[in-house]
Length: 104
Length: 219
Image 1 (cartoon, chains in turn purple, brown):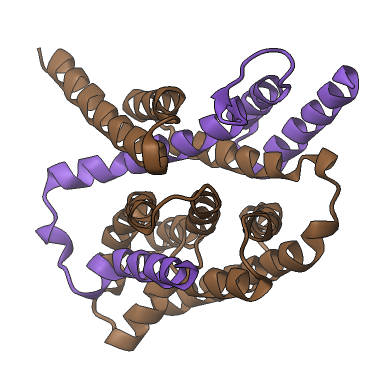
Image 2 (tube, one colour):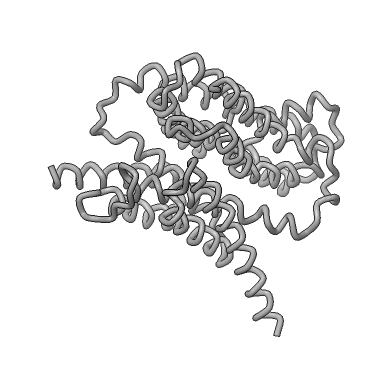
């Protein structure tokens, strides 16, 4: 199962990377599909981020006892202003550690 | 080393840590990192695996996550489509968010530049070395990091920063808000289908938003 997952995931990822570069002509892609692809990164990244922040132990937790949403809000403001991966991580981790120390 | 590559290091370390925490052996974690060479795929697949998701759901989720790579493949095809198959295979294997972003800027500003494939190979190999090294650090050292450091939170923050870079207008903001918001409803879906469902709904929301804006401005 684990090896099937590893090589299955690798095959899918490679084939999608190879698709238009390798065999298909770029003009073969209808403009509507191109439009669809533009919305994949924002939708998918948000769908990864939100549960990582708001869901703990299998349920939605937005109470103050979960410092993650608040720390993420700080990081979100920094991300929007700086567009920097490094500063977003620094600000978010600092906010989380302060909040954990406060709640402890 | 470009600034964007520095952001790869914590992301890679976290991926290594999460791989081991999710139940992979160090060998499996390293092999997975080498054959997929995609942080998002590695992280999400391992988390689904740890949660006991069926193989079909893991692979379907991987496919949706990797759909953006099709967009990059389309974007680079006009410049690199003429290359021999072995070159296109190598470039495809090394094609990441990072390599695509750098190459598109470079090729757009210098359309006459020769040997474009060498540029992509260079940035790709550098990113590959940094990535695999960071994952290995996470795999072998990460287990000793205390839990209260909340290193897994750095993983969410990396995606938050990436999200900032892909939200460029109102339709993409709509896709992000709906895709993210939907997970609060879909997280309880059986077989860990929540992520893939929320992602598809978010994509549909972006398309709908874009279509509505076009209709309003068309009048």
